[in-house]
Length: 147
Image (cartoon, rainbow, N blue to C red; front, top):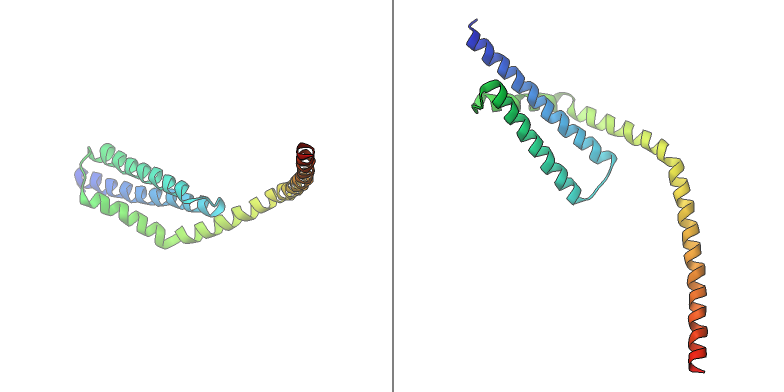
C-alpha cells in the first residue's frame, strides 16, 4: 500500500474518531441538562459554546492532519463517526448515566432538602408574625396621628 493512501486512511479514521468525540461531548451536555434543569437562555448559551467547540475541533483536525484542506470525505467521515456512535450506545449511555446521577444526587441532596424546608417554614412564620406586628403598629400610629 502506498504511503499516500495509508496517510489518507489514517486521516479518515481520525475523522471518524473525531465524530465520535463530538457526539460524546454532546451526550455529556444532554446528561447535564437532564440532571440540572435550567432555562432557555442557559441552554442557548450551552449550544453556542458546544457548536463553537465543535467547529474548533473539526478545524483543528483539518489543519493538523490535512494542511487545512477541507475535503468532502473528511466531513463525511466525521458524520459517519457521529452516526455510528449515535446508533450504537449514545441513547443507552445518556439514559442510564442520567438516571444514576439523579439517583445519587437525590441521596446526597435529601438532607439538604429537609433542612431547606425547615428554614422556609421558620422564615414564613417570622414573616407572618412580623407582618401582624407591623400592621398593628401602623394602626396605632394612624390612631395617634388622627386623634
